[in-house]
Amino acid sequence: MTDPILPLAGLRVLELGQLIAGPFCGQLLGDFGAEVIKIEAPDAPDPARGWGAAKVDGQSLFWPIIARNKKSMTLNLRTERGQAILKDLVETADVLVENFRPGTLERWGLGPDVLHAINPRLVITRVSGYGQTGPESHKAGYASVGEAKGGLRHLIGEPDRLPARAGVSLGDTMTGTFAALGTMLALFARERTGKGQVVDAAIYESVMAFMESLIPEYALAGHTRERTGPILPKIAPSGVYPCADGLVIIGANQDTLFRRLSAMCGKDWADDPRYATHDARGENQQDLDEKISAWTRQHPVADVLARCEEHGVPCGPVNTARDMLADAHIAAREAIIKVAHPLLGEVPMQGVFPKLSDTPGRVDRAGPALGENTSEILAAIGYDEKAQAGLRQEGVI
Image (cartoon, rainbow, N blue to C red; front, side, top):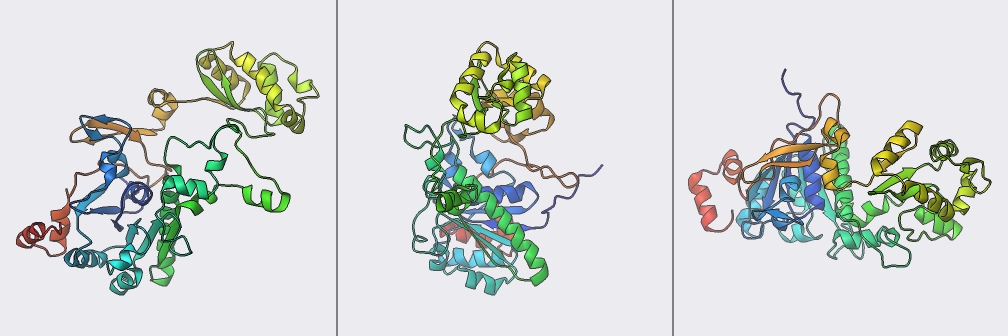
């Protein structure tokens, strides 16, 4: 049986920029078959090559994932020859993804007007902190700043402490996801119009998109959401509960679910006027959570999970990486895969999501070495070995 054709097979993507937001967009496109050519300066490669909370034999464990399925090409875009080579590549490309500070491509003579004159069908996906227009567009923007401007940081953490952050760069991956969505929308529109366009993905706006009804709650009702730790106010029970040997999340805020939870715990909470309705539970949230916690503390995690499953109560463990690697459901879904790496051996990493029934994505290779594919890419557009040697001598590649 032959492998299915990947849904983005034949799509050529040029990825400029570094770190997470733009490259995560490229990762998503590459997961589904796009040929993603990552372009880095020969003397200043992507710092993500050295990122990660832990390394093995000096090797980053972040790079094999963020650059998976990509080809690596070195090219100095600050030089005229480097800019000319990029223009040659643009002739053959469908998408260009970049996450430089707005105005950088224009300073290099590579703005959308120039690129669209070369290839009118090119989709140019631009990722930045504040967007390509507006009074703050010129600012440098990182995920942390975008998460704060977009409202997320104000909501994370305990109410009596400084705003916290998630342990991953949510603002970047949110934006990379929206950038990939915008890219696909632009490609879909190109099927009708024959023309490419610019996709403008800003970190703070991508964060704002996840803020639910936060804005009209204040504008129309004068309500400001605040940090609430592990709970959502007035939504009970729904939170983190301590067990004898760990933590679980239980969500049983609907009346039917709460009645099941009460029966599971051997209590008459569902008939108590303080907890019998959604509003009543919300008013007595802290007291109810303390009662549930007193019950869960008497049992190990595995027992609580089993009892919740038996009674149809949504419940799950608070997993670490170790837990996920041992999780039977994660294994059955192939949500963690192993990818060969020339120095690290097999690297376990998250799989390709979402899952498509007929043309699923896949990971063929981990992140490439710097410039690993430069020669083959240049040769394909007419640069022979002698020309490439000259480019290397000049520091262009």
